[in-house]
Length: 363
Image 1 (cartoon, rainbow, N blue to C red):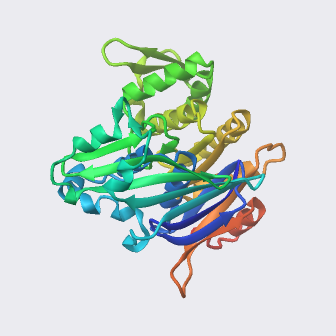
Image 2: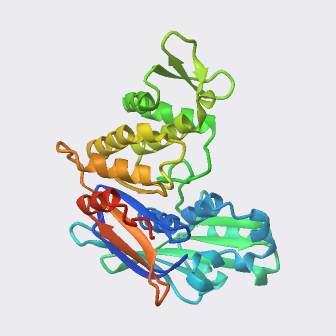
Image 3: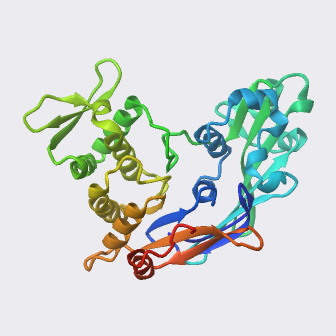
């Protein structure tokens, strides 16, 4: 389980170290305080692949047309204050103080050409480079390296050119990486396929339990592949209806629970976890997440802007029979330096601040 992360030269972080992570972690702060960037750094720590960078581009809705028009600037937004001459360094430490260090840097094509064994599917790296435009002066390459026990290994690279981006080396797909953005809703087909994977592992009942937190009348969940694969829900005394007709909250909860039960990384990252979930359901939803985090041996990191979600989190975490450890982290900027810091609050301190209406979201 991750206990600490140190980030250098990434997004809005010049340098930050946050310690004391627990099984379930909630992150708050003002807008542009780095909440989403922290989740992205956590993702790169657990899935240090160039494909993860490509996925972050998609989640940030960065234009592919802009990449093709200005490939030299494709990776600018990843680097603090556009300092591309400096490494991005992300160091994660677990409870045994074992550290995994991820380094992200801009490389030249010649450096990438010298890396042996870099593959993309069945294509050799030289074949990939030969497929690039003839004028390679406007090509940029970003590479991820992983250091474990002082041994450095190149994981993969992402090459940007006027014809688009190409990933070399190992990569994950969007449905595999354990991050759920605040605003992008996955397709009904993707949810149905994820549900079928959960059903194969006998974990589909957790989806129904989570739905019943929001709507106690839902009594069954079924997947059908007549045309496009679709998930259907049935309320008591009613006919089946497709999931898409049940609103944003049900769809978001479906994605969160399915990512959790199908997770191969043992970590789940959720941006703005409160989105769509009515305040009357938030405590019970946290109880589901706390229980599954322990049962599945998975660590959860989520961000929020909501005082109601914060209070529900504190209430559930402080319950007498609660087995799951948890903590709240507030991101804020220092007045003198404008650098972002992470302040850890245990749940007793958080609850006291909430009860006495003290600022806990970067105020």
